Length: 179
Image (cartoon, rainbow, N blue to C red; front, side, top):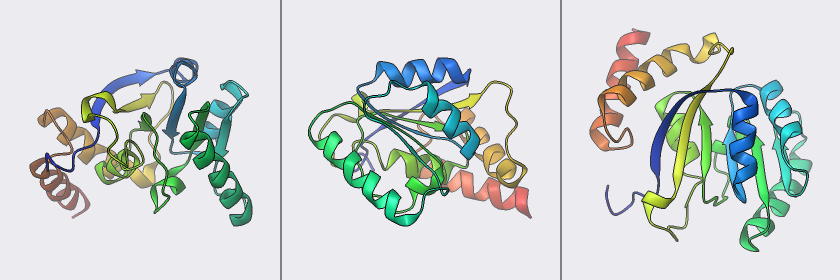
């Protein structure tokens, strides 16, 4: 586990959309994954125009592919690149950001977002922070509520929620909640 660890999870608690956008704008390159398309669109509108992207399922596959090519080029060349996305980026998309933010979700989703941060292992894990947050005034979608409850339990109980024992506890708790 220590050999493959490339990020550090940080629980930020509750953030406003404006506060989150400020954190993203302060980073040269950042990925932010949220649970709703409307949230992604609002955050995107608050980002600095240069190098900002919004990826949701509202884009057709051709446009997503084109934007991901641009994003990879900006990341590689050290240019400003701030991406707000729904969970679609968690499914097999090969990008490598130095920092990431993830709205509360199941631990599996949080770890998928972490997999888009320091993917190539260029930096020490302590320098590549994946910030987990909840947005002020937003309710967790009912569909993922059990996942979030299980993830909160693990994040409250383990110093490193990405360690193997924490992942095992998450799935055990999640199965009990779903059962």
